[in-house]
Image (cartoon, rainbow, N blue to C red; front, side, top):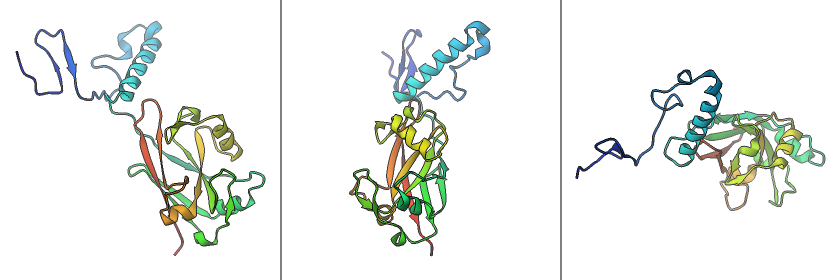
Length: 211
């Protein structure tokens, strides 16, 4: 019996193919196939079938998952009863997203110690809360999983109330905890995102104070 060292190989005779490693199709289609190879009537169905197959292979880890491209959008934090949170959010000078290192840097115009302390009403306690808008180009965001949990209609409503476009969600940040590197409470300085066909990605939040 022949021995094989490669993870992916076809046995002699060509009847059995073994796949032990990942398969990457750079053009998004099976080898030697394009939508031009099928009739116009069935091209759309072929694309859907192939896309579903490729997504399933990515979810199973047999193909490399797509990479998120995170984008930032300013939050219009005018929700009634959150004047202090609006004050804190207004101290954001800029937000930079590095899609290579998956780091989100929030630069403030004032020291964290000078921000307002208040209870955000989310059961996470009294902290120096502020908000940023984040999006990965997937709409609706109910297709996203944040820290393993699916985003719901309430997340869509919250983003809409903060004047964010479709495909964005609000990330409330306890600036004091993030600055201190305190991850003992629920507003930690990191989170993960996942959706069908994409690699689960961990993001880290960083607070930058003025000199």
